Image (cartoon, rainbow, N blue to C red; front, side):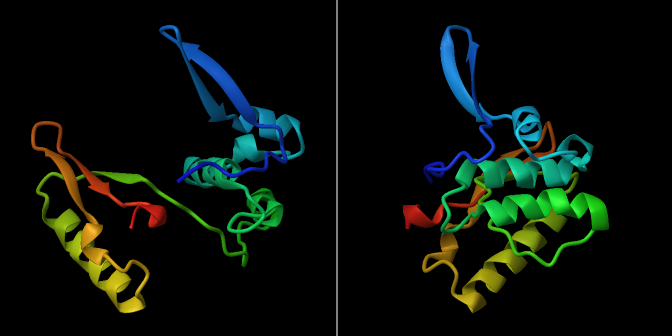
Length: 144
């Protein structure tokens, strides 16, 4: 899925690695441009915030949803629903059994809610026995 068209907090940044240029959404820049205190967020909410900044388009991700992450700092709770589009999920799993059970439950829940027409696309991409890290591929909705 393509990033959103908005950049309300001017957080879109560039960096160069080995001569190749990359774009990313900087939480430091977002904080300097109005999202006060977000450096104090737990890492899990920083991941959510970066995802919201990346996909802000005023349709599926609004500035209000981004602000709700900042507001969470004050009350430690929020009733605002946010959009989250993970491309992959990494899990540490020593046996593989809990991850397989979670994956099966996730596929069934998606099937019941009819979120994906092709729920079978939720699948294992890689399983590295040595590193014991499981990567689950979640196709983007536009890939259907």
